[in-house]
Amino acid sequence: MHFTPLPYLDPGSGSILIQIAIAALLGLGVAIRASWSTIKKYFGIKSKSQDEDTDSDDVQS
Image 1 (cartoon, rainbow, N blue to C red):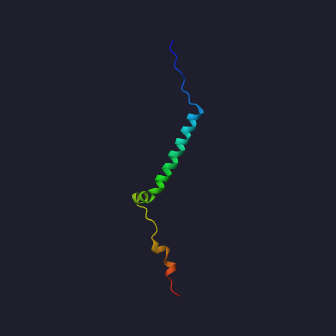
Image 2: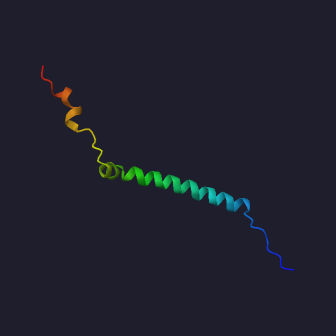
Image 3: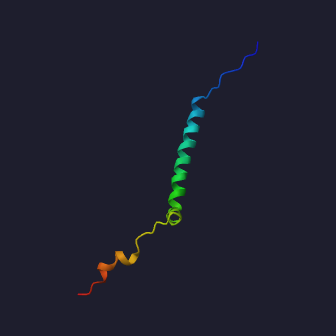
């Protein structure tokens, strides 16, 4: 008779797998944040120009 053991993950292995999943999600967030301007450029989204934001500062009294 041939016996095959059932798959088993001890609590330490489960903890490591959870930490890997969390690190992957956080790493993905950092990568997206670092390349956000490139992503916006790829989809054709333009940011507000600095000229529009500083028009009220140029008023002479």
